[in-house]
Length: 396
Image (cartoon, rainbow, N blue to C red):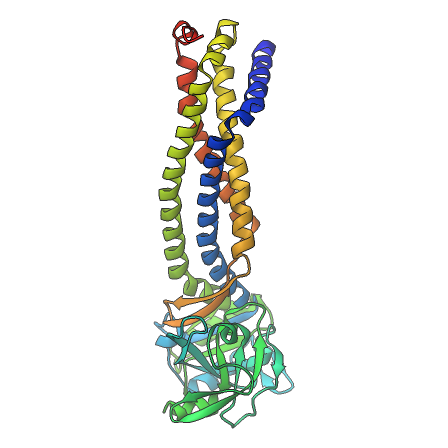
């Protein structure tokens, strides 16, 4: 057994030292794998970024109440009386101004994208005063808060980055009127940063909604009180509502787009990976062909087939690992934190997000690269080990 490991070490060391003689083919295989990893990580970082945006939108002690049977705010509808009854439910936190329950109205307006100029569906949210206290992440970073009762708006920092005409001092057109932008806010990377906020009492008549809303966001005393809060609402015969934890709601909102992007990214990675496998196979077959006499000599000297297989596979894995590191590094430099916008299929409105190239995704890219290297090196290694010694030595 000791002799077997000694042979592995000796043959592998010899193989690695001879890499400098195959610089061209090795670089081609390595860079091909790097390209596959960079593309795969880049595409999947979109899904990770969207998921992170949704997760940053939720607080453990927060809940959302929709009309029963609704899957999103766009499909929901609540009357003013409904929102009053919801605010009286047990478990809701309170401050000096009253219950931390925010009835909100959700509409969509069209604004041009900064980059392309094409129109996008931008969410506009009508809120009441408790909205800022319900969302602990809310933070005004530029300008001022809109005046209640006036048609002034504040915009999320993500919306300002992606859509034209949302700078402080500019105006957006809603109906036949110009609504000035007076402030910009952050929400710790959450979904609210994609939105435009305005006084709900101003938005209702602009869209002829009367005294109606689409959702009520509430802050509970603790996450443990959600079940009591939910039971109180669903058992009230005056209400027909669907209470959900914020985390559950936002998870459902991101499912469609997350699965679609992840599926697409996986398909792209597999297709490109097949090309990289063939590239690795070609490289390793070339390397093995160029070392036929060396391998035959080693076999004639008593080296076994196993150490030779391991040495060839090790060389392929090394190239793949290097390619994976290069690809992961390129993906991190090019994509991490890159701001973009896409369509939220649940609400048919745009959401802004940042690409998220995290450690888990980088690790997956490197593992995928190693899998390519393993497959690309295994068959040439087996061929090298099975090569008849006498036939290879005739070439000496």
